[in-house]
Amino acid sequence: MQQFDNGIQAGSLTGVRWVKSGRSNQSGNCVEVAALPDGSVAVRNSRHPDGPALIYTRAEITAFVEGAKDGDFDAFTA
Image 1 (cartoon, helix red, strand yellow):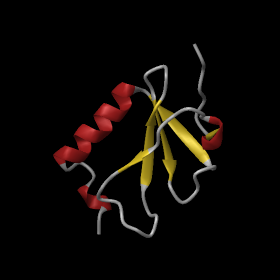
Image 2 (cartoon, rainbow, N blue to C red):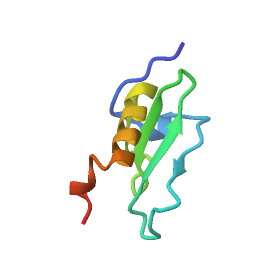
Image 3 (spheres, rainbow, N blue to C red):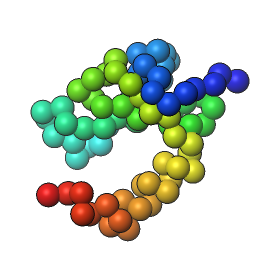
Image 4 (cartoon, rainbow, N blue to C red):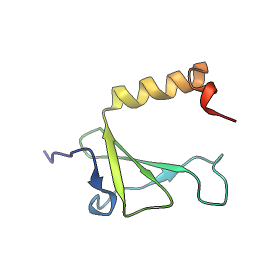
């Protein structure tokens, strides 16, 4: 099984499909995610597709998404 480290260069994650939210704006200000073969999830800044990607476990991503749905991060929106 391949081991991924946080801060890995996003361009080195070959064979993955990057997805961004339909709510992202056209100026490129969005986050993209990709499922990795080991079940973890990579996150990158769409403005820097070859920049760093952070790797999270499926449980970490689930906790984040559920928190966003619950409004836990509403203070960060304008």
